[in-house]
Amino acid sequence: METVQTVTYQCPNCNAALEYDNVRGGFRCFYCDSTFSDYEIRNIFKHNEEEVNLDTAVEPELDKSQEQTEEFTGQSALYSCPNCGAGVICDSLTASTRCHFCHTPVILSGRLSGEFKPNMIIPFSTTRERAEEKFRDYIKGKFLLPRGFKSEAQISNISALYVPYWLKSGLADVQLTATGKTIRSWRAGDRQYTHTKVYNVERDAELSFVRVPCDGSKRIDDGLMESIEPFTYGGLKPFSMSYLSGCAAEKYDVSKEEAAVRIDQRVLAAAETEIRRMATVYTSLESVRTSLVYRQQKYVYALLPVWFLNYNYRGKDYAFAMNGQTEKMFGELPVSKLKTFFFGAGIFLLTWVIASFIGGLCIA
Image 1 (cartoon, rainbow, N blue to C red):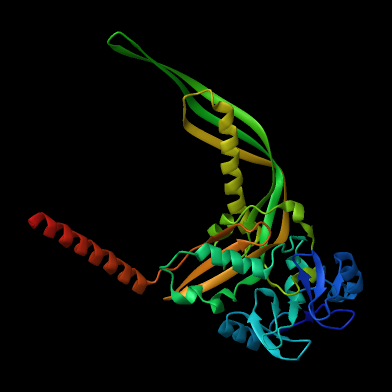
Image 2 (image 1 turned 180 degrees about the horizontal axis):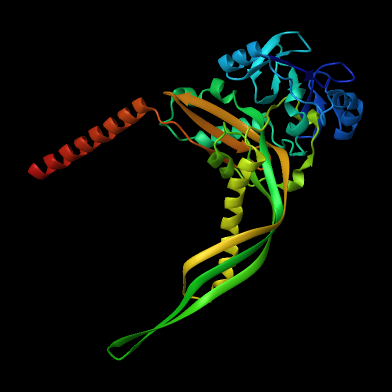
């Protein structure tokens, strides 16, 4: 198990831990209520990021005993809390967390060094209180949910998570070939006539695309993340570790090459939709073939904000996610088998009583 260098951002006035205030868009000490802008924090704690040497740092090599420990613990890591000195174990993909004992926000700087340093970040613009409120609205009226899923203890587990994303931009040439048909029908007397013309269709276009996303975490379902898109890229900022204070964060475990497969599928689907609009004069298109060749392409590694809640019910994980910028939500909800049984039994009993009552009236 490796020991990881840690970084904390402390209030210059009282030395308590600083956190990013989603509402004010700056940093706030929740002990003395002092506030600081992004610019002030970058200058005050410039040494934090310089000492870590983010651009050149590499993760330490493991000896054989450490490798065995990694296999046993599922690639865990050990860090020492700079506030209380506690040794805390975390997942090896975790880049930012809190001390489980004193709750001090701690950034595992080695996790975001070298190739794992993000280029950009979108800070959270919604608060925990707002995320909890939206979750309660999301589950309101859904009476078949397990009791534990709706409990305050469960809701309090919702966490601010920076999810790693690959964003791809570029230019591409798109070509469509197809068989197009125009069909015209009319009636003359008792006869129905149909006139069909067949064409060889070719369309060429230049497509520009900006920051098509793909999440870089294998542990988070791609469909779940796509369901809370889009993010507003006007909120992108150059990456600074200070934004991670008080939030969880992960480094990517999906490589750029792996992400490219998913992104290219999305680009091709969007390209086909757009180029088909150039052939709307035809009644139908058949034998459609679309090809795409990139002229320019560029990747950006970014951390994007998500409020995340996971619940395990009968051995299956159910995840809820809310976009930490736009508040768009999506989740898979568990259904209590016991409540479903009683609900079904109640419907059956009610139907039987009504049928018996109507039958009695008919006999009378």
